[in-house]
Image (cartoon, rainbow, N blue to C red; front, side, top):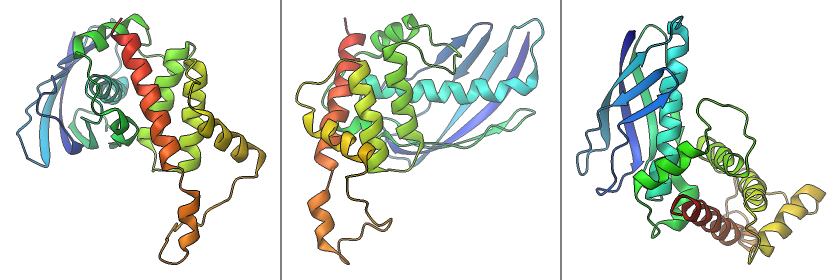
Length: 234
């Protein structure tokens, strides 16, 4: 058995005081344990991590991937339990090999902020999906979760939000009242949707306000997140 010690520095963009801590994730013969310490209003927290590797032929070069996976899981699980509760920049030090800096934006969950599910129920449901260390999604739920992770890891982009949320809605069979989203998706795919300048500055051109997709995106985000919460709460 090998133990590896790290410390994560998290500059977060959201945390609800009532959020439960996700203390451990188990990936086969590898365990990642975190000691969360969340002061009420501090902009930065430090989280000591221990990775316990019980693999017979464990390779230390793999350990950073387990640390990164832990935070991807933590982001999904905490935000499905309490939408919009956890996100930010995560920098990890320690260990023999470098862990990449991670950035998570919880904006896709914020439209479902008033909907809560106990963390233990979310974890039980998530574990039942048996995603584990898999990097290729196959089930509808896993596909939706991976799409949400892509949106969280990348910069805000209306077109990608529409495309990924439309795929989430379709695989989860959430289509009711999402006609505006699917209309936007079809227009993007066909090339008939307007293309905005990268600046998107309405001070230079007020007409861009006529092409604001925020309402459709927020409505779809809420529908997708609440559907996943419903699945977890069964």
